[in-house]
Length: 120
Image 1 (cartoon, one colour):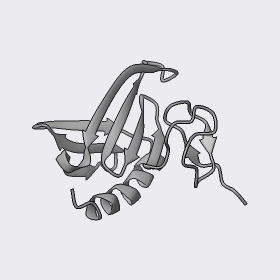
Image 2: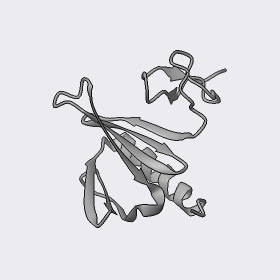
Image 3: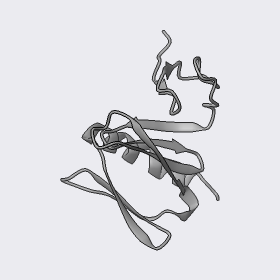
């Protein structure tokens, strides 16, 4: 059975888990570790960075604002509880990203392992 859980950050289409490129827009998917769709933004986690795609107020469309956080420059990571807020320091500033509960759980499972295995 083939699972279609690898979401393309470019067009939003679900692809088979082992896809190297998106079936629709042909974007390279080989470096995507995790992709999370949330209310105010989408988050893409690669082996080297966290990419935040901002959405409009209603969460229906992306605004075009993209912020790239290299993992080697992210420090002081916290996974907020009981409120689901992902917090970290980057470029001398504290960043707080609200996440849905299920997205926080997935990020909390994947990100520490990724950082621990990344030599930078």
